[in-house]
Image (tube, rainbow, N blue to C red; front, side, top):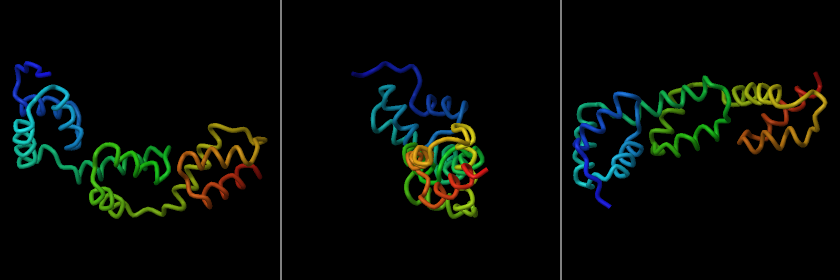
Length: 152
């Protein structure tokens, strides 16, 4: 189904980027859904990359840092979310290397925060641990956080 577009793919992409940053994959997907041809999309993406309107490496780094600052996800969940947004493995690894954090300490602090928000101090140990495992937290961080949370 070919949709009649009054704007070129490049202009539409710039309009989208004026509102918020997109990864190359997200932007390409939006243009495809809008009905632009593959060649027009490729030309637009090349032009945007040349002009530094899209930079997946920088955007991935900023997104990774934002998720860390948010403090609601495990490292595993953050990596999955970035992959879901269309960032490649190299950009994700670079973003992770760029943010020099103690992952064990980060996960422990987030586990404590999530437990305090979702459970009472009298909660069942297994339910607390299962909740954290489903969120992608590693075993030791979840176990230590549950021990600390329930002993207070």
